[in-house]
Image 1 (cartoon, helix red, strand yellow):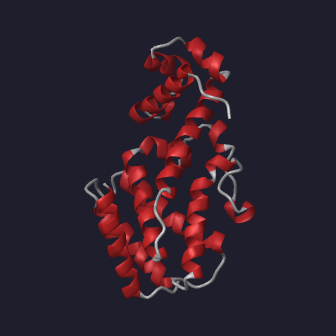
Image 2: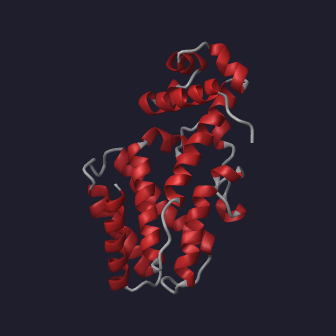
Length: 223
C-alpha cells in the first residue's frame, strides 16, 4: 500500500470537515482547497480531480464506519454483541450525519453510488471490498446469533438486510427530526423494534431483554 503524503491526508481531512459542516453539495475543488489551505492544483496533482478526491473521502468515511462496528469485542452473548454493534452504528450516524448520507443516502454523488450493489443478488452491499466491511460485520453477527440458536436458521444475507433496514430507517427518520434529537428514537422506537424483531425471529423475550441490558451497560462504559 502506498504511503499517503501529508498533503493528500490534509486535503482528505479538509474534505471530510467540509462534508460534515456544509453537506455533500459543498464538495468542490475550490472549496476543499480553501479548507485545506492549499491550491486547487493539489486536488488534481494528488487525486486527478474531484472524482478521485470524492473516492478518497468515501474510503476514509467507510473505513471509520467499519472500524466503529468491527471494534466491538465478541462475548459469549452474540445478541448483546449485535446490539452493541447496532448502538455503534446509530451513534456514528447521529454524530456524523453527512458522512452517513455519503455512504447510504440517495444524494450521494454518482461516482460513489455506482459502487453499490444489490446484496440480495451479490451477497454484498458494495463491489468495493473495503466499502463492504461494515455489512460483512453485520452478516457475521447474524451468523453468530443463528449458530447460538438465538434466532432461527434462515437466509443469513436476507436477515442481515432486514436488520440493516430497521437501523437505517430509524436513523434517517431521527436525522430528519421525526423522533426529536434527545435519544427518544433509540429508547422508544429503534430499541423496542429491534427486540420485537429478534423475538419474532425466534429469540426468547426475556433473554433478548437481558442481552439488551448487557449491551447498554457495555455501551455506556465505552463512552
